[in-house]
Length: 263
Image 1 (cartoon, rainbow, N blue to C red):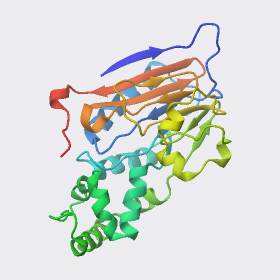
Image 2 (image 1 turned 90 degrees about the horizontal axis):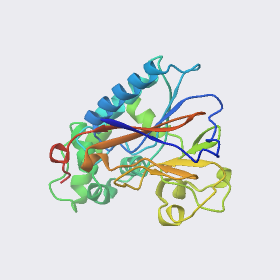
Image 3 (image 1 turned 90 degrees about the vertical axis):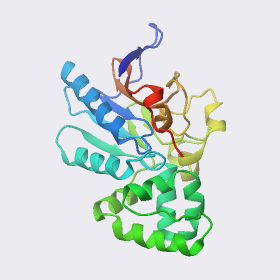
Image 4 (image 1 turned 30 degrees about the vertical axis):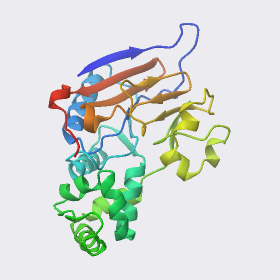
């Protein structure tokens, strides 16, 4: 684990969080081990400089798929929501969209499996189909998943937000479409956009904090903060601490040789 401080030019005031402290967490993708470690780092950070108000914890989506602990990730987030330490806000990622679509359309399992869905099924104790293209097997897997899914998890997946805002920051999963007001953004873009957003220089109305597109290092620019560091494959899960004094990166990290390798 290591922390790094990213500051803006000394002549520029940092974006404001309205006096709140915010911890934004990038894409977890079933890496429950890294989430547990990262939350220890965040808890330690809170004790070193206690905020005046309850800190906000924002999860940027993509809790499931690829890594081995999707069910455990959601269980931990639900426990954080029930505990008094943080105001927890959870966003929807494109992988949660895929999970919900599979529940509605069992045949979608073929596509979901290509993007890590089998790992999610396994984490809930459901045997994925031996053949990805067998529609009857996917119908059986869907029924088993539906039966295995705890009611609290079903509610969690169904009530995820598309965007949340704190002061000068807006938090989304993938990004926003340049030139479109934040209040008018389409769900498809908030969950899926890449090139048009990443290649735009901004501004976007607020500083956009997002995940979705994995990078070797966090992307810290004046108009967007990208926090997806490919945890499921790299063994690096990234969060950003945001407050009126600036921006700080906090990471849980294991060596590449010890990192989970997706099938």
